[in-house]
Every structure is written in structure tokens, then in C-alpha cells.
Length: 388
Image (tube, rainbow, N blue to C red; front, side, top):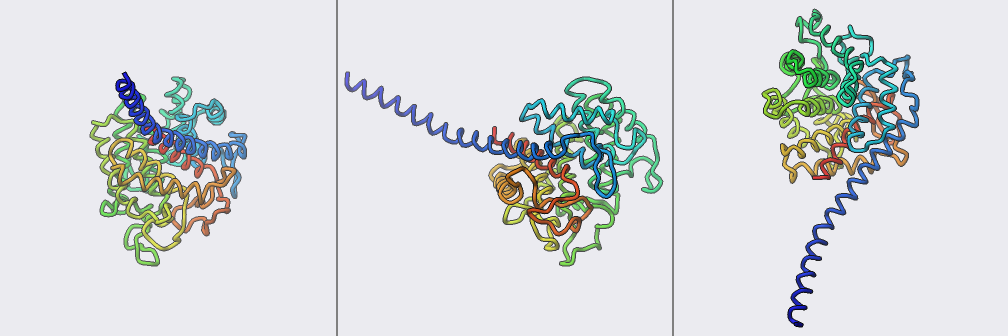
């Protein structure tokens, strides 16, 4: 009898130890997830409190409507935050903004400027959630107009619109979203034709497949060099492309040939970005150069977003890439995100590493919205991977 009791006690002890052993990493994971969510909420709450009226125009050197690209990127991040934190405030804030702008791109449906079209990504996100056709009609009209216009300046009658790599993030996901919603392949085909033009033809091709990095536009392709003789790969510009690849692949079937095409570029970029991460976890404004060698938050946040997504899909080896984003996230939280949610080391608007210099922990960039969006994108994807 005593022997049986001892055996029973021993079995229970083994089960308890097994449960405890399993629970410890699970509890740690949950705590880490909560930390990431708390940071994202803090960053967003700072922004929503400071810019409480989403309809108010911006006033940086001149008055601009709040549908401009900088604000549109913020709403991309807010929609990502909503995926992991279903707070009705986020939807109310978004809809108040979108209704004010009548679900229309900045400068109206005749615009072909990718920066004007960026806001349409959120309009389409909301259409997918609600099915309300008023949210999608202007976007359909806008893209149909662009697909029939010519662009003599770019020397290509249909496809030469995206002469700067930022445009790939601003507008390419709109084409892919509309394809997903309507099933009409003309949007997919036209969007990809414009992407390929930027990648392979503009300035001789803006994507350097050898390094897995993009030149910002034709002004930065060789023989242009930084003062130290290195190529100029702008951090945030590469972040824009990296995020766009993720956003587009999210809307395509994995067996689709376009998905595979984008995935190949994503993998090249992932390797290139891994190779130029700073020791402290950030990336420089100029990715491979010592020119303007310093911390920079917006590019770092976008790289966290893409790398975390790639690990989650099984495309990037966790043992290789998890340390990359863990180091980047910890550095960003420690050295860039203030206690009130303000973001330091944030590069202002521009087109190359020199923009908004010098950066610092306390400097307020000319626009705060797009940086918040980048951080929310990175936080939301990092949060998801901690649930695996």
C-alpha cells in the first residue's frame, strides 16, 4: 500500500514538474506580449491625444490636408494595432478622418501621385470590414483613371509612375487590395507592371539584387557614392519597400506566381538588411555607410515589421532572425521610445540619409504621424510572432 502511494505521489510530482516546465516559458511569452502591446498603446495614445482632431490639416511650412501620405501611413499602423487590440476608439478615429475626406485620395480621383493614394489602403481596409461601397468607389475610379493615363515625363505611357521607391509602399498595396476585393486581374497586372518598371528599368533598375537593397531613385544609383565610397541605401526608403512586399503578399494566395516573385525579393532584402544591422540593434539612416552613422527609428521599426512577418511565415529561420528583431525591438524601446510615447531618433521627411539631420533622442521631427505608423506596424507583427 505504501509502495503504491509513493508511486502515485511520484507520478503526480513528475506531472507537476512537466506542467511547471511548460508554463514558465509560456508565462514569459505572455509577459513579453503584454509589454509589446503596452508599448504600442503608449505610442498610439500619445499621438491620438496630441492630434485629437483627425480632420485638422497639418501645418508644417504650409497647410496640408490630413489625408496626406504621412498621416495615411499612421492609419496603416493603427489598423495593424486594431488587429491585436480591438479598441473601438481606433475605428471611430479612423472613420471620422476618412468620412471627412469622403473616402477620396488626396487631390481627388484624378491624381496619379502615389503619395496621394496612400490613404486608400485604409479606406479599402475599412471596406473589407464593413462592405460599405461608399468606402471603395473613389478608389476604383482613381485607379481606373491612372491605368488609362500616360506619363510622358517618365518615358513610359502606362507604367513609369513610381520613380521613387517610397511610392511602392504608398500605392502598390492599393492595387493588390483592389484585386483581392474585386477579383479583377487588371489591377494586379498593372500594379506589378509598375513595380517591375521601378525595380528593373528606372535609373537602370533601383533594386540591387547583389546587396538585396534599393537605391532611393535614379539620383542615387552608381556612380553616386557616400563620402566613404559606399553606396547610398536610404534606411526608411528600403523600409517602405520591405513593408510593401509584406502588405502585398498578405493579400495574395501563396501559390500565385506574383506572390512567389515578391517573396524572392523579400528574401533578398531580408538577407541584405540582416547584414547591415548596427551592433546596438538599430539601422543607420544610410544602411551600409558611415555617413550619418547613428540610430534611426522609422527604418528600424519597418524592418522589425518585415522580419517578424517572415519568421511567422516560416520563410526566415527563427534561430537566425529572431535575435535580429529582438535586439532591434529592445533597442528601440530603450533608446527611442519616451515614457509618454514620444518617438526619438526619428528622421524627418525627405529622400535620403541627410534629411532632418542631426537626429537625437529629443528632437521632434517635422511630422510625427508616419513614424508612429511605422512603430505600430513593427509592434503588431512582433506581438503576433510571440504567440507562436
